[in-house]
Length: 460
Image (tube, rainbow, N blue to C red; front, top):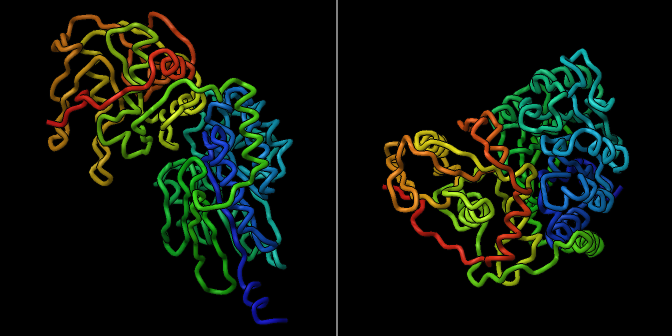
């Protein structure tokens, strides 16, 4: 056997993507993601996904997750677990995707019933063993326990402790496989706890939209972030050698034109390729721009809410805004809608000044480690806060100081109204409008996109 072949057989490679989300609305990005994976895969590779690859996104609302199928088929995904957003349209659509897609789906901690004594979700196995070059790689899939609370379509499911599920899977498979890998759609801290389980060689992570690449108690943990911008290539070696990971930026990869063309066709079929505005100064959509204070993209969505509902003020939870290429030049309806690609409705509420201040205080959540401060965007208001002291200072509505006892008409979305994460009185709802992403596209079509940063959020 030639020396190069002996060396190649020393490792198995995993190609990892996750949280594609609204990349499915971007033909170029989807084409490059597929092309990147195709360019580095081989007989020794396993292509793996770790959830939120069928939703959210604008096309997802029209195709209920099936818009991801051309990508799955193009890269011949081998194994995948679910994410919370894969349940955005209920269980039936994701079950249909599972039945028609090429990959094997595994999830060990989701049950249909009130406890882990119920039936496993969709009858799926929690683990699988894949063979490459005569070696066996065990996989277990786990998802965030908060999924029934944060995904309306999963409310009837029971999601158990992922650490215990991984520990059980290692115990059952550990002696029969050469490597053990966790497909994890979890928060940072739980992902770290999973990595600390004895016998785990690597954790391929998702859910959190920040990239990750580190070792936890000798276990490799990688996470590509969101929207198909990164693919991780993980090598698992025989013996005691630790796994290594190589980052591949899809922006530098080749384009699979068939995947790009299929995405364009689907966008055209639902009217999302229509040009609705021209943007001379690019509007950036990165996580840092959205959470370090006032942002143009946040102002755009907040202005659209207030315009559509004709209210005094509006508030947008910027966790519902999504990263993507800047809005620049001739902008299509799909590109604008992809900024905020969620269902639900735009809601109008009658709230007191004190209730409004409480909401704004909850949006100011300083995180010293990454510098992110603000988790809401506003229109019709000026909000002053002190990042050093960690407190809200003052609020003005249309230039007038907020009056605690006065009622204001507030536009926001149904997630903010009905989620336990935000202090909003449900009974204050006055009216409901259309889908948030359609509202933003309609605003751009009627009013154009000339939004600027203008002192709405002030750090004093």
